[in-house]
Image (cartoon, rainbow, N blue to C red):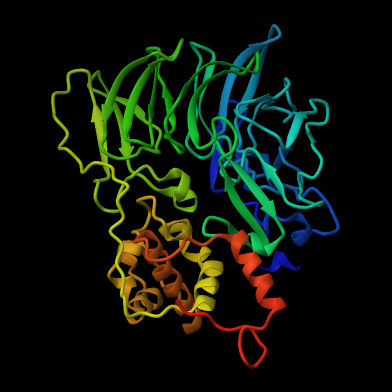
Length: 476
C-alpha cells in the first residue's frame, strides 16, 4: 500500500539529547509503521532512519551519523527511550559514549563521534527475536520467522519493550546505569480470526500481549555495568510499568513503582533504604535540586500511558479519578503528612440495562473496532484506571443516545476528543461491545473466546442457520 501518504512511522517523540562537548543533537527515532513490513515496503529495505539514533550538528542541523538498531523493524521497536551521554574508560581508553537501552531489549554503548558500537551489546531482559548484535556491522543476528513470514510468531520483548520511555539514569561514581526494565511478550499474526478482547488488529496485523515466560508481567530495577555489559544487581517489582530512575551523587537510586511506592536504594547493591506510599502509581523519573543550600527530591505521582492497552496485565487496582495525581517534594527535615488516598480495588461496578437486546454481529464489529478507544479506556474496555474511565461503569455509556453524543462531541476539558469521523453504525457497534463487556463482568454473559468463536463460525458456514439458507443474526 501507499502508506507514505498517511505516514510510515519514524516519529521522534522522546530521546532527544544535546551534547555540548561535541555540539551535536541525538535523535531517538521511533518504529516503522505499519508494523508489518510486507505492507509498508514489500520490496524490502531497511526503512532508514527508523528504530535508530541520528546525530545532527546542533548549529546547522547537518547530518553527522546514524546507527539503526532495528533495520526493517517489524515489532514496534523504537529508539525513543532516553539517550545518556557519558565519558568513561573502556579497555584503557577514555571514550565519549552514548548509553542506550531501547525497547528491543539490548544495551548499546556507542561512540558519540562515529556512531559505531564500542562493545558487544548485552541483553537486559529475555530476548528471543535475535541471538546477538554483530559488533562489526551493528546489525542484529535475527532468528528464523521473527517477521512472521511463515506464520504467527511470539516475540520477546513485546511491543512495549524491555525498556520504554521511563528514564534510566547513570552514576559516574558507581559506573552503573539504573534501568527500569520490564518483561512481556507479543504474538504477531496475520490471521484476522485471532482478534480477541485483548488482541488488537493494527492495520491487518493482530498483536496479542503474552504472559508466558518466567518474569512476564513484572518490572525490574536493573543496575547495569556498561563496560562489562552485564547486570550487577536487580530488584524485581510486583507489577509491570514502573517509574523512571534517578541516581544521586550521594550513592542513592530513587524509583517509583506501579503500586504507588517511592523507594530509595543503595546504588552499590540495591538494598532498599527508604520507602514512601504515594497513594497512586508512579511513572515519572524523580528529580533533585537545591534551594538555599537545601536539597530536595521531587516526583510526579500519576498513572496512565500504555497501561490501557495492556490493562489485563497492568491493572493494579487504581480507579479513574479516585486517587489524586500530585507533585510530591521531599527533604531530609520534611515533617508534612500526606492525606490518605482511596485504596486499590479490583471491584468493577458495572451498569446494565436488562431491556437492551444485543445483536451479536454488532458486538463482534465493536470488538474489531474498539482499538480506537482502547488507548484510553482499556483493552476489551477493561480500564486500568487511566487515562480514561471504565466505560462498563459509565452512566453515559449505558444509553446509545448519550454515548453517541459523547463520542460525536467529545469533552476536551476532560481530555476526550470528538470522533466525528465515526459513522452511526460504528458508534452503535462500539456501544454494543461496551454493553456486552459490562454484562460479562456482571456474570450475565459468557466471556468471548476467539477459538470457540472460530469453531462456531465454521459450523454456521457448514449449516445454514435460518430458513433463507444464510447465517442468522444472533441476539442475546
